[in-house]
Length: 164
Image 1 (cartoon, one colour):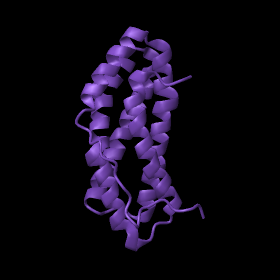
Image 2 (cartoon, rainbow, N blue to C red; image 1 turned 90 degrees about the vertical axis):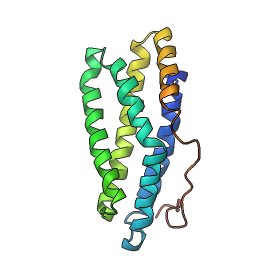
Image 3 (cartoon, rainbow, N blue to C red; image 1 turned 180 degrees about the vertical axis):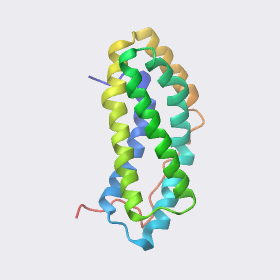
């Protein structure tokens, strides 16, 4: 099923975060000397986009999803992911992540995004009428306006590398 235009702003941000996850995966195992650069980039993603993204989901998207009994457990699971991810972003801010922590972060963030895209967004599109989806899209666009439009460019240390 095609993504409804109301959810595209979230999907676009998901693509940015997935690109980070792919680069982390390809760089793993990350050398100790590269950890600071990676953590700095993780923090930049959080500050520029993900923090506002999570808030938009929690205040706009998830309340709509919770109206459907079948989606409540999924929303609770996604909120649990948000809590874990926020804790991990905080650890990156204090430069206290190991290479193993960074790899686990990339895997968890990727799985979280895929869960939202493949399960939550898909079911919302099936269960919500077009007028409600359009209203949701307007509210999401407004909630996401604080996100940076600037692309976060990888450093020499964190740029995409060929698969090993």
